[in-house]
Image (cartoon, rainbow, N blue to C red):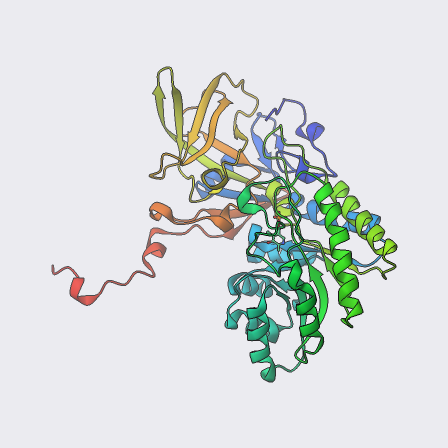
Length: 456
Ligand SMILES: *Cc1c(COP(=O)(O)O)cnc(C)c1O
């Protein structure tokens, strides 16, 4: 990442936060140190320890506003952006997203409870999942959360719960649209060979079945084609497929008012990534839905979309302290940091690339090639491979950019490493939003049977 001594804002695209490598509020202070949200990153590292997740409130609010405003600008009907909270689920992010007027997707009881406790109104929450438990469905139904039917078992379980329900459940139906897109195999969901949603061949059968159901009201259709997608065409194609389904559902008497086109917009992790802006993505989706409805003579549905990554990724920076250095002459130089695959499993899972910068010398010349390794017992625990950095010494703080999505939410305790803390920064203030896990927390769920208790 190039951060010159020019004001950092000069290189930032304010209207498209997902196209920036760093949070919107990133600045160089008078001494050339990197600041986010008015807080010097190395001060945050000293105060809260490392690894540390830093979340920029300004970027989070800007991405929410970008979706909200783009939907207003490009879609003539009602619309709502729904945050896919699996990207980063916490009370603070929920409260912030709720205050921006967005809705929220949950895929488990844990995410659902976080959403409700974080103040997201139940009528703006959607429960997804390809294997929901009876308890998860009961919680959603009792709270008035919309349930996305993914398969026949959801229908069986809900109809078993029905006699105890005061109100019919609001339902959406997820189907596989049969659309291929270019992204990592693990995060493609729109192709036919997917574990998610009803097969398109079954659509009519399910719709007919639900037409006679007393315990639920089908008010929406859902499809999601994948994640970290840079192309617009698959999203345009999806509109036609969904409009066909909408026509079918309405012809069978379902009061379907919501068309939920999923998420998937990519972000910039490294300079060479070139995702569309949020505005361009919404424009493409909205225009395609309007056009698909016009050609089929369908009344415009409410347009729902479900951004995860593009809503939170660029708001996040992870701070690490550099520790050991290993030089293998003629081969590679390893710099190790105090975290790794437990706080950011994306590189080892997907081969994902990232951008890193020294927090106190972001403008220093990058004269050596190093591999930034984690501290876990896996050779594959590498955060950045063979990247150009200024010669760094142990004790320096390094910031890895665009870690706001699918980092803490996919994290683990591998090697019994406690989970990092998270702080939300804004106007020079840092608020702790997730406490650092302590070694004793790691023992909380261990049980030592009495017969194995050491005798002292
Ligand atoms: C993961 C997911 C999303 C969000 O995807 P992003 O690529 O993070 O925007 C939206 N909807 C569903 C159903 C998902 O599974």
